[in-house]
Image (cartoon, rainbow, N blue to C red; front, side, top):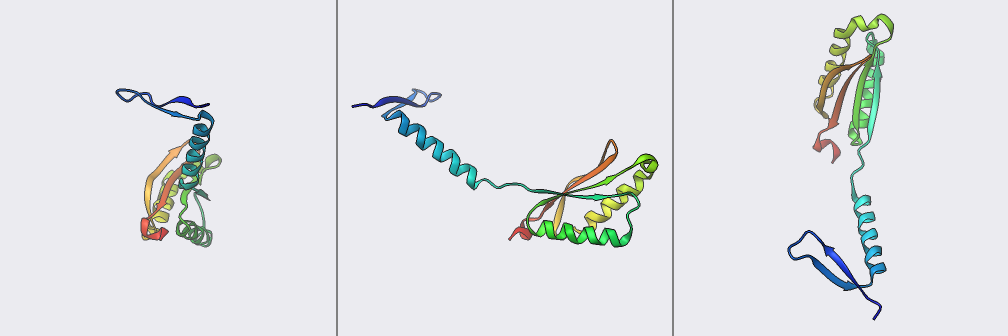
Length: 133
């Protein structure tokens, strides 16, 4: 009959087997995984870069971009990059990021508070559920 004995669930007690065409079985499995992959939510992370001495106009410009990204449903990675001796202004960088989070609090929630990693202080913001709908 050109059929194969295919083991469906080897971990079950007793193991589950099925008599079917093995090539057809492989095709159906591949199609199921492809469908699941298509339905999966793709997480987009947008980055916004600040300097420790970012001016108000630049800050507001970047704030508007972050609002747009959050409304689209993307996560935002805001970071302050310290060049050379500007690492002395760590507190300024942290204050800037916390102000950024506070200005966006109705659109997002803070996923990770400002954290210094080498010359970068990063903070992650993710959109609230109501912002996606």
